[in-house]
Amino acid sequence: MKPLSPDEVKKMQKVGRLAAELLQHLGQYVTAGTTTNEIDKIAHDWTLSKGATPAPLGYHGFPKSICTSLNECICHGVPDDRPLQDGDAINIDVTCILDGFHGDTSSMFFVGPASEKAQAISDCAYEAMHKGIEAITPGGKTGDIGFAINKFVTRKGYYPVREIGGHGIGSEFHGDPFVPSYGKKGKGEPLRPWTCITVEPMINETGADIVEFSIPDSTIKYYETADKTLSAQFEHTVLITDEGYEILTQV
Image (cartoon, rainbow, N blue to C red; front, side, top):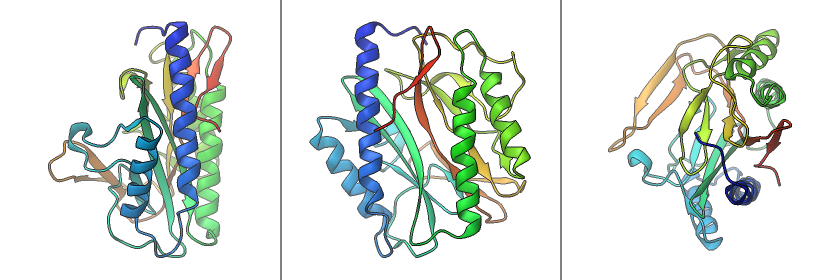
């Protein structure tokens, strides 16, 4: 992806804040009895009310405005009419488009008190994301990020998903480079100053296979753990600068 101009950086900062505010807003609706379709509708209406549009809606045929991935769902879960239940762990992934630029972020939420297992894997995913972000240096490599994530996650006894990862973002929703959750220092694609990437490690409880599912009328797939054990994910959009980095999707 080509470097952003100063004006484009400001647009990315603005849409990043908007996405962060949307995600924070949705958290209050993660309650027992609420459906993910209802949360999707709230997200859709809120986004439009801010003069933005939800990037997932219609993207390669994806039918909803957000992704909602419950429990064993790794990513790209499709909102539906299943009521949330106490004990559920859910990742909500939002992306807004404002002035032609994308802000992408996700977080784990719990319905009622979190189980010890759900809290532990969620904490690992959150810390792993920050370990990856802290490894960003201008002129560094994507492998630096993946190495930091993988080292942290495996020491905690969890399994980073290798097949899916972060990506370049800006005027495009998904662009180069691929940002893995594993790798070797000094290897991979270069981290170019004044471009943006997402850092979004997906962490599984076991090393079981990943199962891919089709979404009707879409080329997007969603993924689950084969043994139905937990998965967790956090995501930020990050601007690479001449000095280091700036997290754009923070309130």
